[in-house]
Amino acid sequence: MTATAVVGAVLAGSAACGTVEQLSAGKKLDRAFEKLGKKSTLSFELDLDTDVTSLKALDAKSEPAPGEEIPDDAAELISGAKITVTVQSKKPIDESGEKDFIGMAMKISSPDGDLAEYRLIGNYAYVRADVDTIGKMMGSPVPAVEDLPPEAGAFKDVIEGKWVKFDTKEMEKAAGEGQGAQGSPAPDPSLDAKTQKKLVKALREVVAREVSFKTADGGDGTEHITATAPFRTLITELFGEIRPLAKEMPPGMELPTDKDLKDAPDTKVTADFTLKNGELAEVDVDLAKLAENAKVKKLVLTLRMGEGTRPTAPAGATKLDLHEFMEDFFVGPGTSDADFSDSDLADQDFPEDEL
Image (tube, rainbow, N blue to C red; front, side, top):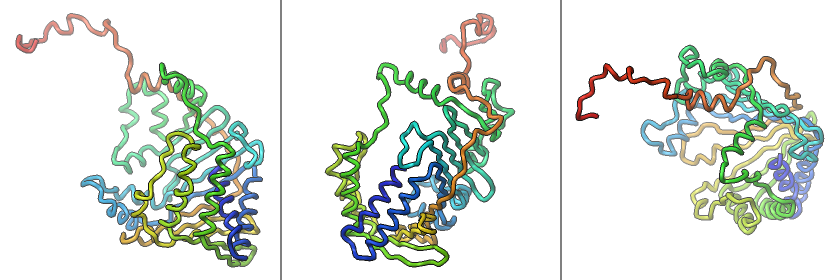
């Protein structure tokens, strides 16, 4: 949500130093992002429009070690995968704090069905996955349910693709206990309001200099706004503006240097924003040009906005006891002296030189 707000502010702010067309495009995008922020339930779908040949060409360009090439099954699955996300708040999204969000749902699907799904309702997280398909894709087949030990418990439901749930408060408590002598876990890194304003102002100036906008009517209340910029120049200047603010940012955020970015392609990349009756409906970014000499036929990242559906708790989910799962399944049941006796070794004939 923060990224969406920053993108909206940056794009809208680019109008300050632009032409009349820039000004018009900036205002329209600003209004479109404002409308998203007024919703209390928001849903979007992320889709990578590509094919197996293109993915394998990109993989080959990265020069993987022998045996580490992307498997055909994985490439096929990625090329057809989609991610859908829905968030729900008690307040409009742009007025919501962390405690205002009451539900979230995320699903990863393929043309053959759902691969994984996650829902967060209140203090409970619900998970299910097609573990068999994912395991084959990763080249690590999962064990059959009948081969699992009795202490596997609810993990058998995980293997079978059934819903399981766990208490997020218990998970946080377990994570806190894991800190041990290190003390309480550090709070999540965040930007204060003053730093956010500086960051947005800096990014706006770069976008105003480097990004060009065009608008075109599509009919039936549809309008297209395209934003085009040379990739390397844009990201180099963006990080150049961000670096002076590094000390005000959360610890652990390492920024790339100009030297790190010098090999990035400087071809022009275009983002196409589709507005329907003034509302943001879709964003398409053609990434194929960034592949340079790799034989990539198509590589388009698409974000589609939706009305959103209320996340609900699935019925029949088995509760997963995280403590029991970690201790019994991964560590194994405890072993005591009673499990052994002298008679267990009495008939063993060990050579003296091995004692």
